[in-house]
Each structure stands twice: as C-alpha cells, then as structure tokens.
Length: 402
Image: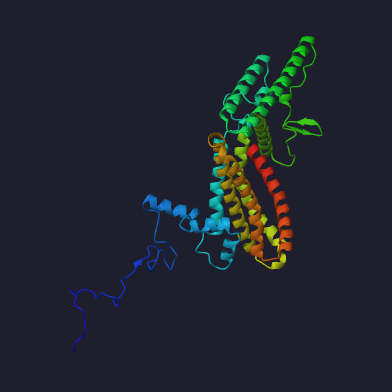
C-alpha cells in the first residue's frame, strides 16, 4: 500500500492553491495575527518600541487625522454649506476628516494664527507698541513730574510721527496716527493741569487732589472697591480657600492695572483661555439646535455634528480674516493699490460667514425659507448671549490666572 507523502527535502507547493503561511502569533494571547490588531484580545501589533518618526506620525494622525482627506474636507467645508454634515449623516464618513478632528485641528491652527497676528502686527494708532516704559498714552497720563511728562510726551509723539512717515501709502493709517497725536497732547495738557493743582495744594498746605491715573479699578454705586481680606472672605469657606480668593483678587487687580498700560497682554490672555470656552459652548450650541428643531425628531448627536462643522467653518473663516488682515497691513506700506481689493475680500469673508451658516441650516434641516430664517435668528440671538457670557468668563479667568 502506497502512502502519499511529501519528502522532508521537497519544496513546499507554491501558487494560488498553496496553503497560507502560518500567521504571526499575538504576543499577548498567542492567537494568530491576521491584521494590525488581534481579533481575540484586540492588542495592536505595533507597540511603542520602534522608530521615533513612526511613533510621532501615529500621534499626529490620532490627534489631527491630517492626511489626504484634509484636502477633500477643507474645500467642501468652506464652499459647500451643509455638504459634509449631510455626507456624514448618509454614512459616507471615511472620505472626509471626522467632524471633531476637523474642528479640533482648525481650532488649534486658528488660535495660533490669531495670537501670532497679535504679536507681529503693529498697532501704532493705539500707542501700544512702544518698547520704552511709560511711552504710551497710559504712560503720559501717569507721569509724576512736569519734566517726566514732557519727556514721555515728546518720545511718544516722535514715535508716532515716525510711524506716520512710514505709512506714506495709507492715508487712513496716517489719519489714525494724527488722531492719536492729538489725543496724546490732550492727555498731556490734562496731566499738566493736575500736576500744577497738586503742587499748589502742597504749597498751601491743603489736601492733594486724587490722582486720576490711580483710581480704583472697580466701583460699586460710585464707591471705589479694592480687595481686602474682609471683603473677599466667604464665611462658610475654610481659611485656606479664603486666602486663595484674596490672593486671586489681588492678582486680578494687578492685571487690570497692567492691562490699562498695555492691553495686548490681556488680549493674549483672553485668547489663551478662549478655546476652553468654545469647547464648553459647543454642547450648548447643539442643545439650542435641539430646542429649535425639536419637532424634527433628530438625535442630539446629529445636532452636535452640525455644531462641530459650523464651528470648524468659523475657525477656517477666522484664519482667512487673519491672513487678509496681515496682507492689508503689508499692502498699506508696500502696495497701496491692493488695499481696496483686500478690503473688499475682507468684507466678503464676513458676509459669507453669516450666509454660509444660514444656508447650512437650510440644507441640513430641510425646512422652508421662513422657518429657517426664524430659527436661525433665534439660535443666533441665544448663542450670542452665551458667547458674551463665555467671553466675560474668559476675561475674568485671564485676569485671575495669567
């Protein structure tokens, strides 16, 4: 009797009918691995012990999901209102960046761009970009002697005159500089009058008049308020919490005084906490949509997808606003002929922002023009109130924390 057997020295069969090679076993449970994840225990084949470039690529993909899909998602997001949201609802999700990752990616990029624009954009008309201490409108208003007042006023006006001479191609920028020069002269005259009044009171032995530049930052019913251990104390809180409240109030008052001298630090602080504010407002905006479209019987998560795409579009629009603003500042000095075109583009971006959100509501929720207009106004009004409170909270947080 013959037995079919393959000699040990024979080569294994090859070709399409050849048996599959044994799969690599999972390092955790020993089950065969047929892909990047184990079907039995779910452990991934890749670990952290590999080249750093490979690890960082996976981290970037996890956070931003930036790949070829971004080039399909960004144009559709900006030029086709409601398209990405409807595609997501229809189940065609793999083609585009997911709503949350798209929102997160544009949120991060937009706020870095805004902060960069604040740091690199000169603001001569506000008198805030002077490097020397006291050389600003606030510095003029706080001078303590006539000599110091004259020195600060001359330096500030000289800096503005230099800025005006540089802006030869922008009559509007030159007019703003002229306005600030007049404001500086008015503040200088007012400060000189107070200094003379104070000197006369000292010579006559009378009480000195209050310094206008040292007034309290807050007033309640016309009474100045400053933090003390008593007026910041809450009786039912422990002592260490009250001590923290007092220290926080003092720190906030110091930041208020510093913001009067240079508001750019306060603006930067606001933007540093504003992303958290928008993350808090995101579910509330979706809740507003749920209320407005209650009878559409849509799930809350559907409204959340609308909110994510709406805010992603807003961040993308802010990116374009920053870009056009920087180009306008450059054109004002180097290419004055482009300024009218850039202004028109700037206005078009802001107009498209509101038109887009309206059209998005129309295409996603599929209601008539009248009902869409009514609900768009309702949601917009309520959201603006929420946003106002959110920004106020961001201001308070920036004063207390930064």
